[in-house]
Image (tube, rainbow, N blue to C red; front, side, top):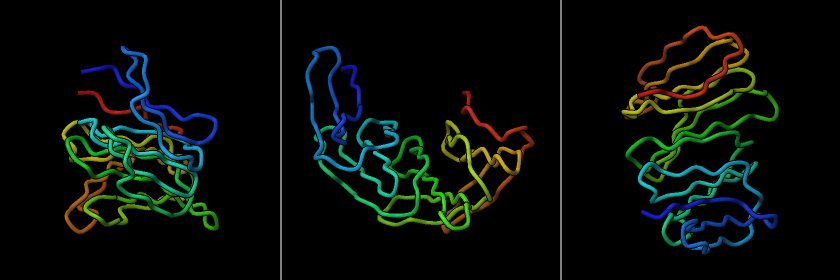
Length: 167
C-alpha cells in the first residue's frame, strides 16, 4: 500500500524505497547500470535490464531470483497477472531485433524484425504483445502460444512507434 519507487544509483545498484516513509526498503549489489527497470503487475518482481544482462529481483526483499545473459537488451515488459516477461534483444552483427518470451525457467523466441524497435507493451488481458517495428513502419501484434508464436498481425504506422495499450 506504500508508494514504492525503484531507481538505479551511480554505482549500478538498484534501490527500492518507500516514498511515504522516506526510507530505503532494499538495495542490490552493484551490477552493470540498468537501462530500464520494470515491475510485474502485482509488484512481486522487479526486472532490471542492463546492456547485455538481465536481473530479476524479488520486489519485497531484493533477493536475486534470476540472472540472464544475452545480446544487447533494449526493452522488456511483464505480462499482466503473471511472472512471464517479453524481452527485446538487438543482434550486434545483423541489427535484427528479436522478441523473446521469458518465464517458467526458459526463454522462447517469438519474433524477429530487421532494425530497431520502439515500444513494447502487453494488452491489458495479456493475450497480445505489441512492438513497434521502425523499419517495417508498422506495429506488430504478437499472440504467444504454448510453444512459441501462435499468430501475428501487422498494423501500418509511420515510424513504427508504439506508446501502449488503452483499456
